[in-house]
Image 1 (cartoon, rainbow, N blue to C red):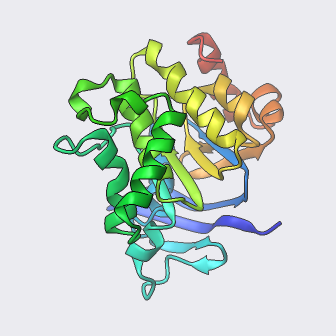
Image 2: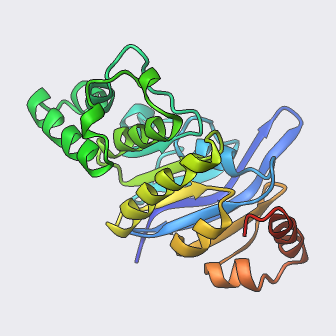
Image 3: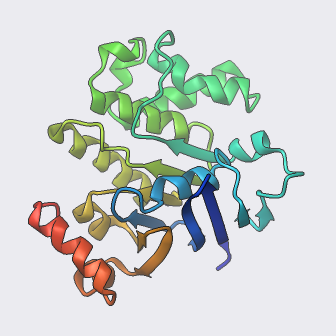
Length: 248
């Protein structure tokens, strides 16, 4: 099975601060990869490099075998093949929920308004927000806004869905509704790379868990192994703190 997303030796620094130190990560189609690690470990920067929101200093990122970090590549064309959701919902406040979801399919992908609207309404139905299609984002809860953000990312029919700490800004009681949606999307075969602090969710849903520490993938493997019986002492130390905090 060839990787849909293939990160090879990626290095990224901000001034003197080297955040990624030669990261390798291969994500096969229909698989879910969970990135775990402490603050500053490089999870978010890795996702930003993969989505071309940051320029890599060295290494390559391949999407369906194409080197998308080649300077000659049309970055906007690449981003059309990716769905990205951040912890901040980033919905357009002046657009309705429906218009937020249909904007990229119409403006960027050139689909007809009727086709985009029909698909968007189907997505909103699927996430339980069809009755909110005419509402504006500020009338929704944080969990509802994040579910709309995921629907907006899915509306572009991405090859890979990149999720960066999408529950971090939510009140605890709203986390579950967002994670249920991600679980459903994963079960339907979407290829997903997600940075998360939700270890229980990663254990249940991910096919592979990667522990990042100081800019490298220190340990990677099936959830039961990485989360249940880690090899590296640093992984065990990180997880012990998570367990003490009641998050695993």
